[in-house]
Amino acid sequence: MTIISRIKNAIKKNNLSFYELRHHKKKSDDIYSMAVLQSLLIGYPYIPFNGGALRPFCITYILNEIVINQRQRVLEFGSGISTILMARLIKKNKLDAKIISIEHNEAWAETLKEYLDNEDLLKFVTIIRVDLKDVTTSKGTVNWYDFNVLTFALKEKKFDLVIIDGPPANTSKLQYSRFPALEKLEDILTSDFCIVLDDVNRKGEQALVEFYKQKNRNVTYKIVSETLGVFRNRDKFSPIPIRY
Image 1: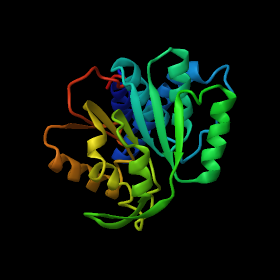
Image 2: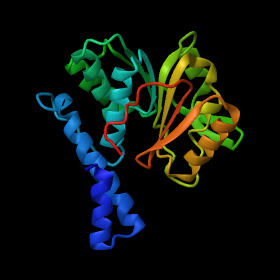
Image 3: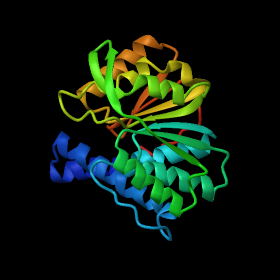
Image 4: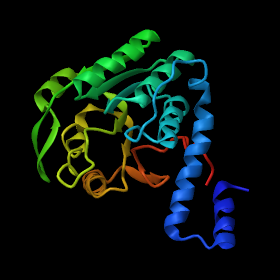
């Protein structure tokens, strides 16, 4: 019996609301994913999961994407636990992959470098610290990574996996802050790419999704476990960690 079947049975038995169904489904996805992640957590230094981190399900999806679809050049907006776990995966599985992670918070960037250095993982990850500046988009002026600094840092680089989980966009004032990632940087993608966008249950990210779908009609789009949106331009093996 799949997890969705069990939830449906629970709904019938307990008369759960649609909101409760969504909550239970997300919770079950994350519990299952935490079990999957244990091989990259047990025996390693503790890393703190908090409310700002990617959900365990989202991290597991990304790790599966790297392994199953052999992603080699990863660009991440917003550094964190995902950065450490991707680096651990690359090292442990001896993968031919490198990560560039963009981070605006100087203190957090330095803390993360210490974590990575302590595990000899900086050979797999480059943390680029970039201030947030006003950037003009089709949604008006937003606070995004300094475009001049970023384009210089990424010059002549191409990526087959892009993870968009920064900068902060969790208020009405900041809701469109992630627009430049898909509006300004399309030329950094390889001919076969996957873009992972977190928090697609929010208004700003939903507008970003619609913008990119209209601009690039050759890409497919899928929402996975409510909060994770995925663009890809070629059919690939499914990295979904749990059967629906």
